[in-house]
Amino acid sequence: MTEPRDDPEVTALEAGTAEDNPFFASALRQAALAHLADGKVSLARATGEDGRLLALAPIRPTRLGHLIPAVAAWVHPLGPLGTPLLDREDPDAAAGALIAAMDGARPGRRILAFPYLPLTGPVAEALKRQARIEGRPTNVLGAHPRALLLRASDNAPDRLPPLAPKKRKELARQFRRLAELGTVTLDHVTQPQDVAAALDDFFALEASGWKGRRGTALTLRPAERAFAVAAVTKAAATGDAALHAIRLDGRAIAMLVSFRAGATAVTWKIAYDEAYARFSPGVHLMLEASRALMADPAITRIDSLAIADHPMVDHLWPDRLEIGTLVIGPKGGGFALALGLALARLELAARPILRNGIRRARKDVAAMRARLSRSASAGSPEG
Image (cartoon, rainbow, N blue to C red; front, side):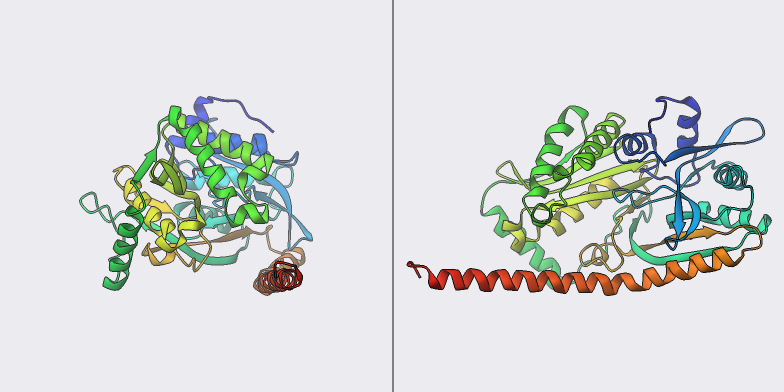
């Protein structure tokens, strides 16, 4: 679906939200609706008694536990942050209006889900308060922490934890060794006229690595590439996108794309040239991008969008964001809600087992290919 551009009511709401969400702000929301949404996604606009827009969120029908019908805030795989836009001046009224809009023709009888929601922020609290007022149970699925960087103060914006002396010395050594190979530069591209070329560099760099080999690089998936181009281009036009890069003799060896909305920035996608892995370019770039983003006094937090226990960023950023799926049941709960929650929890428990099985299978396939390659080499005339 598409939506009207330059809606003054939406612009006013985005400027005064209880919590910022770059993925639900106009640039990224419109790009996602145009390139990633199916025909079931719609835009919930919730107004107050005076007709003022109080809440906004893309929504779609779903099934809790793959069985029980529900309505959820739409969070696509490229935007793992599902905070609805609620009016900052009256978040409780906004939460009530959004719940009513998601209920539609069945007030109080639908199951509502808010995936990838910060669980301790004002939006989650407003939704839970409104649910209690309406006599609707709330439950949380898949709660987990992810790395976050908060501004300490205007005088000390860099809250990166002091690295252990051994690690700091190793990073400095790696950077010196990298500089011995050529001229190393750090870029933070934000100007719209420069963004397109930088994004092409990112596409090429990402496709050159493991994501390219697995076929998951953005440029290999037409819809995802189209979303990325539209999102970065639209956000750059308003100063809400940046491409950070480490370049060696002008060629990108590590790149990161970030977005922002209001006081929140997110580190979206990172890629690096695996030929330079021994220099830890991804770590150096994340540190530099963190400092560049926090140099803007309007930014108070950076969300990593990372999985729990991420092997890199969890060691660089000291703060954590508790995130999960908030489920608001129908009035009085009921058997369908209990069954849906039970099935969803079983699925969440099974995911690590499935991931480990897939990981082992990939290792086995790689080992088999290596053995076949060695056998072929041994049997060749050159062998």
